[in-house]
Length: 537
Ligand code: PEP
Ligand code: MG
Image (cartoon, rainbow, N blue to C red; front, side):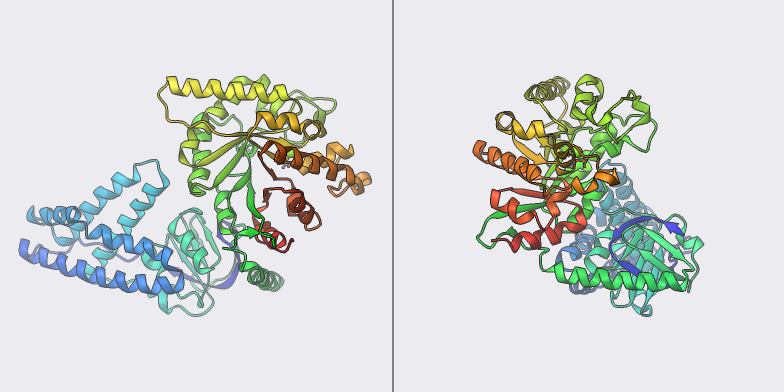
């Protein structure tokens, strides 16, 4: 089995077609004089323009107008008089047309690739795509005819440029596999737009997989089963059918607003644990992020993430969400979430111990590093800070003071940052009972029913003997939720829910009735939750 990044959902079963890179070696091309080379270049640019225009039209049909914009961007770039005049200058200096294109595009590539910004890096891959296409036209080199592959093909390439992707006929391609790229790369965006399952960044896949190999590609997990058994094929064929059935029935909710029958407007957000998961929320029609569990940034490693590392993660999410709301929860450790290098003391009763906001307030340098990263990342989108496991008003006041201290520091250092709204999780009975007091201190609430249920019912959710008591539908938990929503409404602040109960169809009508504003759920539950909300009175 091979592993990559699941970048476009679905399961694809089919035969591998390896897309080799075209040979673009132009060392044997002879200089035909400045006029001759300029004419060759002009012809190639014209052919490139025609070819690209045609692809734009095809892409509009197969993936949509928005996706075709990437290729339209190529046309604009190559028509840039500065770029073309630089190429002609190179020809005047004795370069063949291929070398002129190579030199100028590489110069732009280096310029874009060096910038620490995802958008700029995408521009770099655009320039590389333009360079390869124009040189291929100049050399009259033939690339694999991606548009002619047989039905049920799994396309394997180092990377898919937009011009390659645009040739794909989605009815013939079962899945896409690349050696590079992540969930925000062009290949991923286009694969999703075409509904083709994709696993990206599968190291050395073009070397390991052979033409004609039978493969199963899991576009959720990024797993690739090479040489699958009959039972695996049967299992994944069934999974794909079930996935398509479900997707079909929920698809109508993708671009629909989350509005009840009587017209109350709600928001359906997604919960994430890693920056990359934000894309998953977008893919599933989420209107924002209601909970980013930042403790995952601190886990699976042997040292604390730096302010820069955290800034990168938070700003990536903000940029991915494109100005949609992003609620980021500060470090929620302790209880069942241990982080060995933080050397949290062993406690008799960790769930009632030195955890979450309590730990952060007592470990200021660690807390401040995270808050500084959050305030800096807020420049890139609509970030809000959320405090976990709050039980007293004083905790909120202290945290707000520290946030302000961080803002002042950043101001003094001349760093870019933004002051942001601050909210709390209501996940302890104490927080629910004083939600009227907390509402005066914060900008929003988010009800964490996972913990609220456990603490209210005095139940350990991991203990099978008492698991029947672990239920958010118990009257005491419902009262805590209702009280919280009503106190938020009375104070005029936004109230959401990010515990699992936000997706519970039994609970949604009640939450709607009480006036909950936002439902934050696992990305794969977003459309179902929206459907349930739309069906409420
Ligand atoms: C909750 O307690 O409901 C919650 C969302 O937080 P977590 O599941 O991360 O404890
Ligand atoms: Mg919790």
